[in-house]
Each structure stands twice: as C-alpha cells, then as structure tokens.
Image (cartoon, rainbow over all chains, first blue to last red; front, side, top):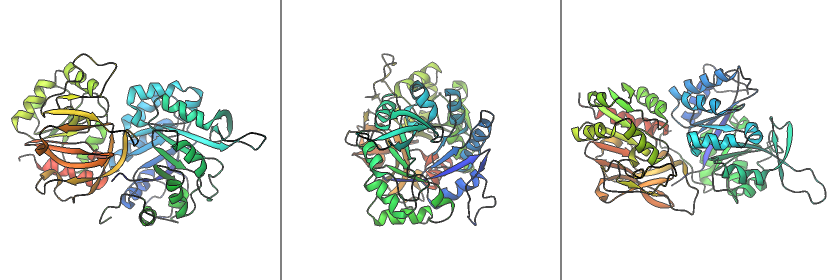
Length: 260
Length: 209
C-alpha cells in the first residue's frame, strides 16, 4: 500500500529554527536536528528544511544542519532556500540531504534543473513553485509564478511552468499557494488539482493548513501526493500522529506503525 | 568491519550513518584488493543501471565482488545494488556501452520498468509483505511494515523462490531477495526510520564473530 505523505516544514535561519516550538521533549526547541528527531518519532514521513534569507555566507550553516540531521534522523529530508548552483546542490546531497528544492534560481535559469537532474538524478531534484492567483481582470485566469519569497512577479503561468520543469527533469513539485499561505484557511485545491491533472511527478501541497480537514481536502480534492505544513505542527496544534489518524479515518492510506 | 562499496552511485553517507547508528563498524571502499578483508559488504546505489555497471567495471570491482559473494560472507544490496545482481535490465540509457544492460548475473532474470498508470518513479513509503518467517534480515519486524522506496524499475527473478518479500505499486513486485548469504532489498533501509534501522541491525548480526 503506497501511502500519502505528511511532511512538516522547518524554517531555518542561520542554523536555528525560527518559528515557535512548544514541545516538551526538546531540550533546545531552536535546534533543527532536535526538532527533526521529534517529528521522526511522531511519524513524519519526510522533512523539509527551508533555509530562509540564505546568504552566500550562510550556506555553510545549512550544509552543517543537513550533515548533523543525516547522522541522527533516518527518514528522507529535503533542503531548500537560496540554492543557486549545481555546487550548492552537490554540497547538500553530500552532507546527507536526500533531495534539494530549487525555486527562484530555476526560474532564472531552467537549465539548472536539467544539469542537476542529469548529474544527481531526477529523484533528488524538487522544484518549488510559489503560485498566486492572477489578479482579476477580463479574461484573466490561472496562477502566476512568484519568486524571492513571493516578492517578485515573473509573468510566468504556473501550469506552463509545471510542464516545463517536468520536461527539464524535475522529480517532484512543491507547490505553495501564496494566496493561502499563512491564512490557515485551507490549501488552494483548485491550483493543486490543476497541476496534478497535467503532471506525472509527485505533488507536495503547501500553504494554508489550519485544520485537519484542510490536509484531507488537499489530498482528496487537490490530488496531492503529500501535504506539507509548518505552523500547525510547530505550535503543537496537531501532532503528526493526530493528522495521520484523522487521514486514515477519512479513508486515505497513510503510514502508521504499530507501537509508535 | 562492513565495507560499503563506493562506486559513485550516491547515498553512501546515509548508509554509513545508518550502520553507525545501529552500532556497526563500517567504512567506504572502492579498492578491489581489500574487498576480501571485510566481514560483510553493502552495495548501495541510486541512479542508472548501465552507469553503475560501467563504474563497477572501470574500478575493477566486478570480479572481487563476485568472489566475495562466492565466499559466503553476508552481502546486502540496496535499491540499485539489488538490481545489478540480475542478468540484465530493460532500463535504456543513452550513454550506455554495448554491454551496459548486462548485470552481475548472480540471479537469473531481468530488471523491468514499473507499469504505467501511476506515477513513476515510485517515491515514498509502501508496505512490504514478508514471504517467510525465518529471514534473519527481517527479525523483529511484522509483515506489512513500511519502507521508503525511490525507484522506476524492479527485479523479476526467474526463480521466485529467492523472493523474500513483495510490494505492490501498480503491480505486485519483488521488494527483496535472498540467495544464501546474498540479501538485497529494493527499498532504502537507511531512510526507512526505525524499521530500516532494524534491517541494518539484523544485517550486522549476520556477521560471524
């Protein structure tokens, strides 16, 4: 039974987790490795580390986080944020990251996807897409790709970009709705369903999770293969195991190990 | 000491970390002359079949590896390290040499592509059914345990008696084989959480002390 994945996202700045965490079993709630171990214990299927405001000098820090995580956490993890070059990707994979996610750099130079996929295999190249519904106007529909954390419009149509990144060798898509992100009002299922209907690679839905039903809907209505969330996990609103029990009750196949 | 064959086929670090975490001494190696000195070998692997075989040949590791298998000491193939045990693969590769689709031939049969109708590669967790109760690699685990898979191809051995566990993704396929001292799995024990570490620990215990 192939299962849907539940993925907590950890925002990391200069080697520290920036969003609040309230877990009693952590000695140091700001330590990304401790938090990763916590989520592993709870039954997370994968982890995503997002290196926010990653400066060139800051790269060494996230590589170190990847290396320390790989020594102590034995589920797959992805590192994203500020990745610009094949060398950035190589150093993270060598440190022990299973996948990297590229966003702005891929928009500026789509060949980066092809070069990285050729060199390291498509399975470890995740393309992250920040999508925003096009502003209303006569005959305007669909979503636009934003970059640099949603600050810059590209004019690129999301669905066309999805086609292109697949052609270039992306192994997975991590799609964040910039309309839904931070609202806790649910994922943009229309966006995710539109992407899922035309892609043959797994889709990780992100942005908007506030309630358990939102994760269910992302899978059932948005046809996502995996659901990513940050704040609902970090603030202890829901544990990973609560999410999974709920999804299983909804008839969605998930990984629940006996004794966990 | 467990040798992890380093033939440029990725994820060595994860396998190393996993074995260390369960208390196994291990070291990466690509030196054909020293393979025989290890108590056990792990053949990891992510990537393309033809390139992996070409790298093994270029490093002169094929004969020492077959020799090690013949010695009766424990061997664990992971993912591509399972697939290259077969005679041949359907995986086409534009950069392949003429003999690029020829495997080690430890097992009769081919490597085949996962059927269409669902997303390929399979990326994610899947439950695995153990076919026997006495496979020492799976001691302490229950049939139906979850493991992490990343693959587009699977092995189809002619002798189905070697299949130790099965999995379903679009179709039923062999998730692992055992032929005497040779154990191999399609999933990644080094990325399969507690279950995966159990497999690695069990493998370490196969070493005769």
